[in-house]
Image (cartoon, rainbow, N blue to C red):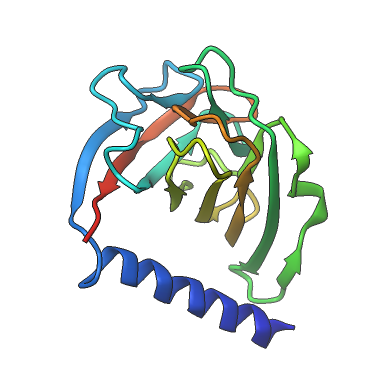
Length: 210
């Protein structure tokens, strides 16, 4: 099973490199949102504060850089909007698996985690688990969102994050799925389960056609 997972991850990485490398378009930085400890979320809404999330680009990439939560032992979540951020409750079907390794080198895990996947669910999708709030603990990673403004097909997305969690574990999380809507997705919100985002940045990029 581990070999199959590794092969599939390799194939996905190859497709992403093809989309963003020599056979794909240039990356354009659209917006950087920086947490200052005063807010509970970071949200990107098309047309708001210079955010572009429409048919300008076929692929959008969000980069999470040193996300640090104010509260200890919380999950970091995302959700989508189809009404310019008035509601974040888009129906999703997703998969979720993770790999763990602790600092003591006496505990490892590679597993599919059914409690974190979604099956036609409008709730928050976790993309980081057991976030620690020690001064040196944080989460980094990325999310790819494909053709969010398309009104024919569902909206696919893929997430990979790595978290230094509250029990001194490196946790690599892979989430993938689709927003089961043919309406245009025009907003994405990231937030911890509780408390504020103490520090960190999320950068949004658009990738053009080749």
